[in-house]
Image (cartoon, rainbow, N blue to C red; front, side, top):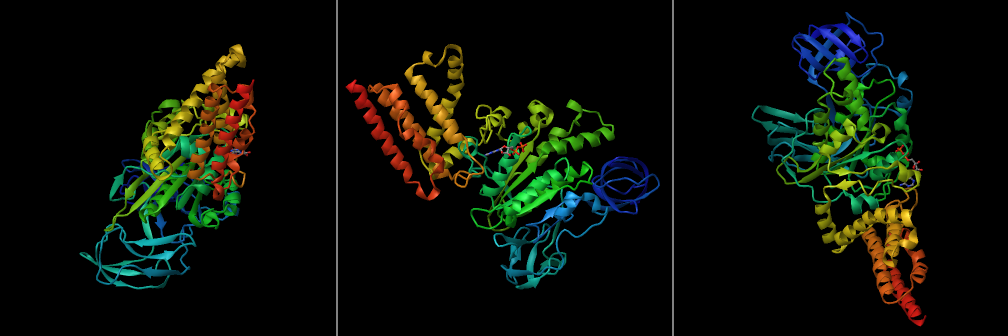
Length: 588
Ligand code: ADP
């Protein structure tokens, strides 16, 4: 039996009897309104269903019909530039704001059925193909060429294929398989809880350059890596996510807002279409899909949105793209799990979260990675996941943050005190870390500057020494320090203010290419070395602290990307002024 009757309704959780043939995670249609739900627990013929829409007006006796298939998404051209809710219903901005106007149970197809796409065949009649092979492609937007791949489970010889204008549901190729001819169109369906297959996983070895100095230089994330960014309110979490969505060198960005209510996403909706991708000069929406929940969707829908998002991301990865998925905030998803678990009367774990919280979070982040995708041609694709966490009260020991940190390799710790001092991005350099650092170092040493990793380690060590020096200053005053240590405090101040601080709203500073990051760091350390040298050669500390070139150093971040030779001039000026200071010192 795949039809049952509701026996109990408790918020988003509906209990139904009589669904003996249904399976866990099957999608069901609830009541005559056909609300979409998912079976999350089965006991005999009693199913517990998590409903992704408001359940008011539904009660015992109403009918429930299992569709017999798991929650799936439609994959194909037309996803980019769109906004969807957690169960992939297309959304317009207005609906997000005023979700209550959205009729329950209405299902518009996720992909536009009318639009014609210009399909360009890349395979020919007679070619042997396996899943993942690219049959052809369409220009989905002006910046992304969408590959039409052989669907999973289809293998054989191309019998028909041609260029032309097709809608997504028209056949673009016929493949002769062992089990007969298979018509392939441009839609693939995929169950969201099942990771999409790939050929094999690679070790992430290239950085995802974000143009944010504190991230790329000190706490890099790899292409195919996973990072977590816990952000108390007002600490700059949203700004960082936007900066990454805008500047990271990913081909495709999937932005999942599993926020409290739809209105948290309206900022994103207002801003993203206006943001211009510096690489293409086009709106970043041309390579972006937004997933958001409307304000009338119950918390349970957050779970669907996380899975929907990562499935879309895997699909673009399979085409050979580098994809970045941002999830804001995964804490809201965890809270939804807690609420459902409570309603199911499961045994609660830490702070009421279900015992499977950690494994759910791990399964999600494990879908990131750099891989050789399926298909006969060896091709790389990567999926990087950046998850925001909002620990209540900034307490990092709470279960969601802890479960996340156990699995991700990068932690950007946003610090309320830093944001209060207007040090942005407020990533605390003393407690953040990246376990990709060694690999990323060797990559940057090879591609940008062989001194890079040495400089980076030295700068970090100076920053770490700073706090103990500051402690001494607090106790006995600055005069208690040696001249060397005073210079050390000067350089760490410069590292903080002239390097780590980066203004997301400044035209030149918002994005800093790796070459410039390297030159900035090198110049600051060069100044430190030269002034130490001058000091030991007899220059006065007061003199060194007043050098004109220091003003130039505070403005290094404003040097334009096309004028990087200016760094050489600054170094020459450092040489000159330090020499003069030594000469003056000798005169006295
Ligand atoms: P959250 O999302 O954590 O609540 P926001 O990202 O909205 O915090 O940041 C709060 C404010 O901090 C922003 O409105 C902005 O004024 C400032 N801010 C954050 N990051 C930066 C940055 N990199 N450069 C300049 N200002 C920033």
